[in-house]
Length: 207
Image 1 (cartoon, one colour):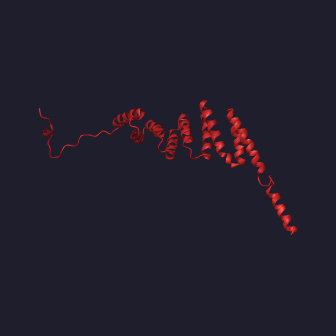
Image 2 (cartoon, rainbow, N blue to C red):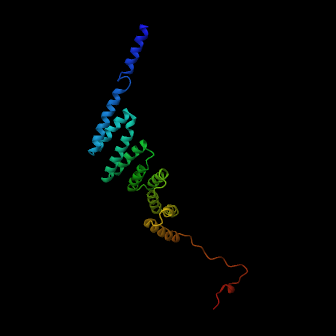
Image 3 (cartoon, rainbow, N blue to C red):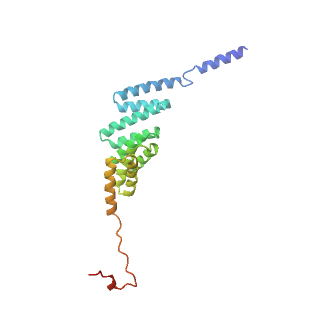
């Protein structure tokens, strides 16, 4: 009986041990998260990302906080035209929050600034899959497709917009422009050949 009591007390001791069962790391993570939040409030983005990255390493519940801080730092870097650095932050943010269309939209904007139209188009397509009712994404993808010379693809996006918003001025202007360009690029169709039973004299127009 004494042995059983001893085992019970021993088990309770281990359950309450903060070091063995992770309470200490959690306290450290909480402190780092508070420091990161305070730094973000003060727009000290590097300190915020560093603290929240360490907090997330200790406790994964802080990963969304890190993702938000990365987006905030990316926005600050975009405002300073630091596009490669912003792209790196957005890449990291998407690893944490791959279902956020807004991150794909922002990254597409950065990729356009870096003249990577293929990547930007892919990101707008990803945003459309996540939020298919957001017409802004079709508008932006339509623009990229027009710039790349994909007039049919651009027209498809434009028609999608107009099917939901008939008075969209930008889409109406793009459609008119695309129709004109597609007509200019249409292949030349020669007149049909003369029938072998028709003489050259018969083909002359009457006076």
